Image (cartoon, rainbow, N blue to C red):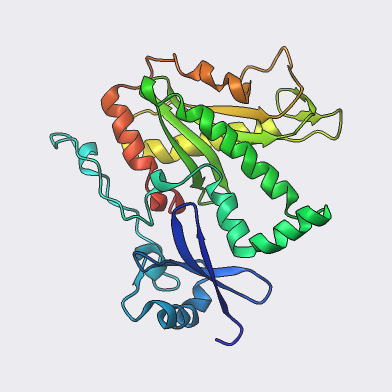
Length: 299
């Protein structure tokens, strides 16, 4: 246990304790108000729990997925009641720790920075001294996701719902998931301040540099989202990929590029008027499924 340390983190309305290895890798974290513990590295479960109990007391609760015995496959959650014919529409219950609707824009980056990034004091010192940091790109990405999040929030009066920082079972996260009358949109945010960007069928170039597989990755992400949602919803769920560029001075789309929606941040409002893909009941069902963290981590 001597190799593990506990780092408190209290920001953006959340109060957590992170258990880290000496190199900064997070092996577990706990939500202080609910005393719910998430184990990220199973081999440290016993040590991490003992350490967290020193801070939280003995009455901590493990997430069911984290409590599964080694080698035992986590069971897929039962389909919510509204997915069975003849049953009333009733949103499934979710714990605070599992409910992705509680996430703010940039949630995954915030968690990574909290677990392994510099303290606020150290970051302030680096700003004062104007020293570059390996975390600079993380903070730029965080600001980009926040700006896009604000634009997406404007769509709620039109019946749209949005989730941020949706984890993927195969690694990484989905920056934003927009669910509404026009279907579902898997949104990937790219922040390139003051840059000129060209986007083709599979690749993008920033300031004429090396090609980056932005479009191809966005299509793969949308296919993943569609597979997960349709598996749990029981009806076809149309999902489209969206790339949103933040802070760019110019954005050029190839004439053949039509499989991915390409926007600058203020153009996201173009999604608002779209209709005819999902009914109000289907929107509620898709959102109820998509907001469950374990639906994604077990898929």
